[in-house]
Length: 352
Image 1: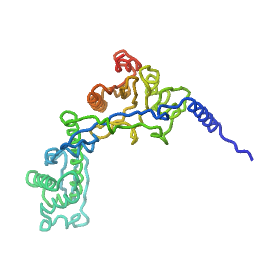
Image 2: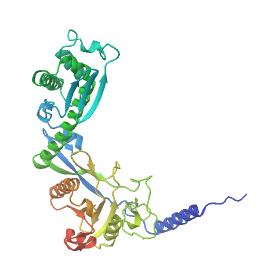
Image 3: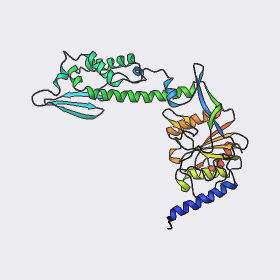
Image 4: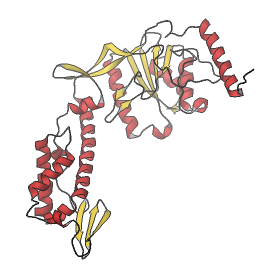
């Protein structure tokens, strides 16, 4: 009995057989065991060098919730309006409506001021809002100031706060989340400007033959000749052959000063990465030059060339390159920059 395969399966087998024959004759640098590494960015904390990861940078920044989230909820952030039939609770312009049930107030036991005191409300909020990165003493004081401002300054009764306690909890949680994001940006700015930083060449990111096993590979007609993992193990690029990243890869492959290069896969555990204030940054390409220097290339479309995200990435990339003392280069490539195409930008950065 003869089994048949589809045209697409046949094309895939032909491509794999062709790639297999090619790699049998021309071993990739990775399969030959040619070393390829990129130094890690590190920073010093109390005499110890730590890998520069966003969470590690944040964890080593001393902050107080009171300094980043003012304990004062004004009318535009949180408001309670009592009506004849219930309550309206406004949070950032969104209105929630609570009605009385029958002749009894909604959840009347919550309004019993003999049971519920400011301290009880504060401790209830503390249990619901406990955060691992905020000491309980700071959280309690921040909550105390929030409750005191609402009751003493804005004259909202404690019974009304108790009825709206879940809405209040959600609003305070949102303030904590916003504060934490602001703290991360502050911590990262301090890391960039003041923290003792260095590059680790002894335990670097190490690229290896099977590092991207399981990834989808490029199977098009263009024959790259300098990819570190070989022409049959080039991870897919955004936009495919019609994309601008592909044009950047072609320029790297054709540059005589490039010994070999690698398509650096975003969010892969084996990939080279640098920290940002909230996440990791994975540059698009890493190349080894013939003179032994490392070239890191991030490609950007014209619509993202000057946004805040790109500026942050460029800044940390340039810090990384500067710390290498000439052993590494970083560049952001555009379709055209100052009248230069991608290949010309690469040659300019290399120094040719």
